[in-house]
Length: 299
Length: 274
Image (cartoon, rainbow over all chains, first blue to last red):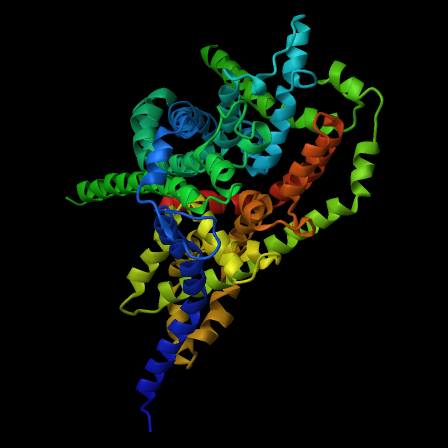
């Protein structure tokens, strides 16, 4: 005879196992193991058939860092990050401060600014490919208005990247604005009332109270923006597909064209591992600043 | 007087920004109604001769509907399993004390920083070796896996805030964990169920990279793949392409307006509590 207590214990453990197994299995098989395998394959030259046998050590990595197109794609990712951090986020913050106060039409503006974020990236890319088209698009119309021959911006080696960066800004500033608005709404009304009573204007309140209290939220949006920037793919494909002359690749479009399309498993995995290491580096930095903050608050 | 000016510039700025968002969307939807010649000369205005053919030919195109259907299967399949598995897992993390609780929770959190791109080649090989290429599972399973982490965080946060008394009372009545999960947790969690569903649904619906890697068979193409193929066929025939774009854009916008609350809650949910 089992005692009721051990029966309950048994039911508890069987519940834990039954409830956790589906998620744990799928997560391990399709997220954790592939990341480990990518690290392993990156030391081989392999087309994906049979077992990986041709061990090449760090050759795939060495090749990458001598490859002009890869270096360029790495640079492009850093441009994307720079634009996101130094233009997009401050801008999103500015707009959030403007419309988080109860001004007339706040909901309207919030909805409009958020709209691009919900569009598929492919759709966004196609819309802008049209806008940029020197024969048909808006750019053509504006140039035509001034009687000039319109340029083909996304086919121009010097301008293509700028064109891509503009689209990235257009598409993603809304989500950061939303995150900031949510953060601003969480600031207690009493603090803001007190500031008002003390005669602080909206500018002073923003600089002295709202932004400092928003720091954790800002950190989070920086973190999300960094990780998102490093994984950009969909939006580039319909715009430039990495062209012209491979100047607008991100690391992921590079991985797609030179790893996946050519079934170079080892080489492509090496690109993936580099992306992973950069993400890891950023995540560790993020954890650290967060933890330091917790400690400061505690003591 | 001074505030009047300030308000004026504030609104001027906001309306200019709004125009930057709206105009590209507006010219795209209108572009689908224009003849090629008119697209060249009149890109901003309303169409002079409305041309409906771009839209009607798409609506009569069986591939267009097939791709939408495939994307629906991927999105609904992914969402169903993400909601089920993530809520079960989060339920254990939120309500059941056991030694590895925290450790396993962190294990899932770790997955959040794993870039999907790193996994794609090994993921492709795994799906191939499981014999799943050429089936919907090739898209659905990896999407479930990568959707779990964030969903578990959202569910766990919500479950932990549920009043402890319900739980204690149910237990005294001899309710088992499983019964509690189905009879109390799920019915009381509609807001978070909606949020996770909406986010997973949109993520899957818009996904391009994963189906692109996994799917070779045209009969299984998702709509973003379909639209890119279409673009390849009608390279500068923008009227046709913009019609396709608009037909996918309009439902997305309606969906967004209807479920805005849940989308925003999900996307900003983690941000505030940090």
